[in-house]
Length: 429
Image (cartoon, rainbow, N blue to C red; front, side, top):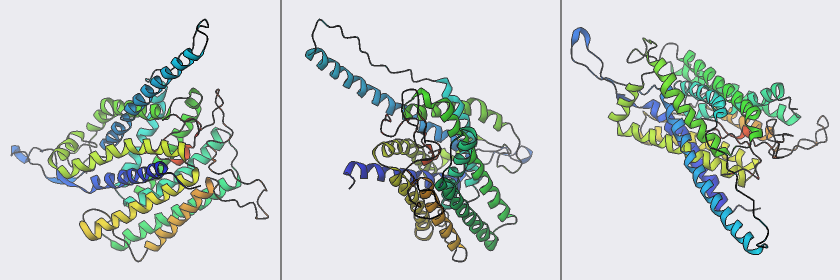
C-alpha cells in the first residue's frame, strides 16, 4: 500500500531530525573555541586558549532539555483531547434522554510521576557513556555501533523478563555482532594506519567500549521501563518529557557540581567536567551555539516524529529509516569533509573503508532479521512458524492491565531513543 503524504512527511521528519542529531553532536566535539579564562602563571593576566568542546556530560544536559520540550507536546495533546471530549459529551447529551444523568468524565492522570526518575538515571549514564565514546570515533561509526542495542535488549529481556527468543532474534543478534566487529576493526585499523598520535588505536578501542557500554545501560533502561512503567499506561510523550525534566535536575544539581570538583590534569581547566567552560565556549562561538541549538531542537522533534512513525507505519519503515539515517550521517560527513571544511566531518579510508561498508550491511540485515522482516521458514532447519513482522522480545506476549500490548522499545535509541509503552495502534501522541 502506498504511503500518504502525511506518512512520507513523518518518515522524512524522523530521518532528517535523527541525522541532524548525530551530526550536530559530533560537530560540537570538533569545534575548537576559546573558553573560560584561566589565571596565568605567577599572577599574570587571565588567558583563554582555544580548545575542543569536550563536554559530554554538558551535552547530556542539552539532550534532556530537548526531551523536556516534549512536555509541551503533551500539553497540546491533552488540550485537544479535552476539547474533543467536551464536543462528544455535548453531542451525547443532546441525543440522550435529558432525564438520564451524565456521569462520564475524562481522566487525565497528573504529569509529574516520580517513578519515571528510575529509568532517567539509566538514560543519563547510557547517553553520557556513548557521548564520551563519540569523542574518539567518527559519527558514522558511532551511529553504526549503536545498533548493538538489539543484542543487549534481546539478552536482557530473556534473562530478566523471561521472554522467548525465536530463531530470527538469535540470527539477527549474531549478524549484528559480526557487523559490529567489522565496523570496530575497520576504525581501529584506519587509525593505526594514519598514526596521528601515539596510542590513537587504544583511544578508538576505548571509544568503542564506551559506546557499547552506553548501549548496555540503555538496554537496562528499556527493561526497567518495561517492568515499572508498562502497566501504568503513561503516554510516551509524558515519559520522554519527564525523563528530560528529571535528567536536567539530577545533572544540574547533583552530577555536574560533583564532576566540577574532580581533578583531571588532562582537561583544559584541570576539572573533569567544567560546565562553566562549556558555557564560555558557547558564548564565544556562534557556530558552536548553532550546533547546540540544532542538537536540542532535533532531540525534541525526533522523539515526536519517532512516536508518530511508530503509530502510523510499521517495523519495516522504522528499520529502513534507521538504516537511511546511518547512510545520511555518513554521506553528509563525507560531503562536509571533502567540499566544505576538513576540520569537520570525516574522510573515507580506501584501505579499510570496505570493512566498514560490509559491517554496515551486516547491521542492516541483522536488524531486519531481528525485527522479523524476513521469513526463513523455508529452510529445513527452521521451525515452520513464520516471524511476525515488527515483533521483538521486548514486545511479544506482553499485555498490560488494560490489554494494551507493549511497544517496540528496540526500535529507537535514546539520547534520541523513544520508549514506547503502549500498543502501536493505541499510542497517544
